[in-house]
Length: 213
Image (cartoon, rainbow, N blue to C red; front, side, top):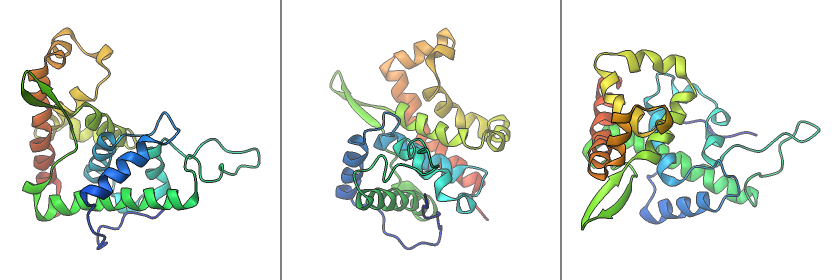
């Protein structure tokens, strides 16, 4: 199936709050259990933009279907099921455009107004205080990492960038693979909030270190 490629020079407008809500609703209602929610998608697109691999050189079909859990199994003749998992070609086109515009919006904010960037995290009330949780966002980010693990490996090992990736890796990790100390940190709402808040500054710092001169 053909998908548009990311073009960093595109003049597509960022999504409005209403359009972002529409995209969230459309993703939520997809039949695939593997489809991302809006938080995971936001993290996934951020990871793609920070990847050592140039996203504009990557075919849209190599990364875009991950957002909605793939295009389904091949039919007997090698074709993909028509429009899966979407109800129509129109819906597929709509979601594709919204995802691409959100990707471009993130890239534009990082380059032009980094202080205005707000990643999409969960917010929950805890004893009268709003605490944030970036777990779903981090899972999405690590999904992007998994598309090019060899390319990311030097960044995780880098003395400066590695520690910046640490809160993302912790929040998005399989907790069964974590030690007791890290599991305890994640189980504490206040510590989880602090780790989640560190993600925003970490991402902007990574971008600042790796953006083109």
